[in-house]
Length: 247
Image (cartoon, rainbow, N blue to C red; front, side):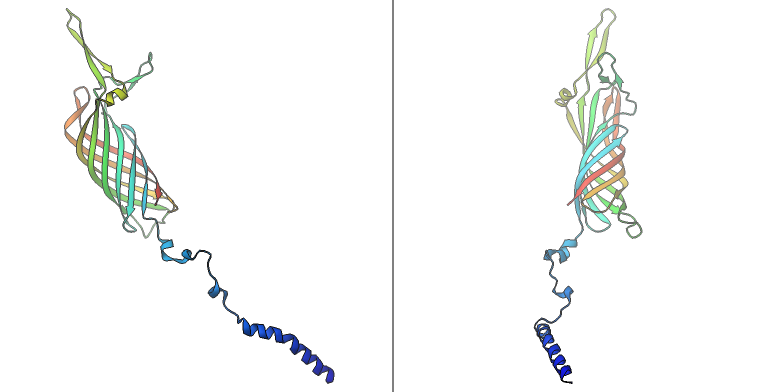
């Protein structure tokens, strides 16, 4: 009995330090005392989605290639506004380019003017099927309106040769592209487009998509591209690739 009492006393002595520590440092839930290294991580503003984007467009049409730039801002999950500026070549459907086998330069018989189109468009995009399609595929409809500049630069200079007594003969001497720009004139008109497209991937800092647009840009007086052939409606069908950065 005496030995048992000595054993119990020794056991209690060994527990005293642990009991005193438990009273001094009560147990706590680690989830309560945890402090993140960056407190901003838990702020609501950290989780705000990207609302704006800017980037470049690559355009393809019957007249050739074009390029442009855009700025886009989302007003809500389904509605966004944009500003776009593009540049593209303009040709009549009957134009045919040839290669001179002796000089290697290209020429277009009967061509009078080089035409380039600069449409500036302000418009809106409406996202489709927001609730039924995953965010990595975001189809939309779009429409825009704005001023368009048509640059008219001479393609060739008419040269008349006197062939007496047979009369005269007129031919056209092609003007170098950069020399023709010095003589360019600008025509301004109003136009717009309607289209549809889609953006791909998640909002991870970049914006990639494709769209199909139909531009309608009338110019009532008409501008000669080929001799005696005036173009009165500019624009047409375009396939556009979008590459942007979210901000």
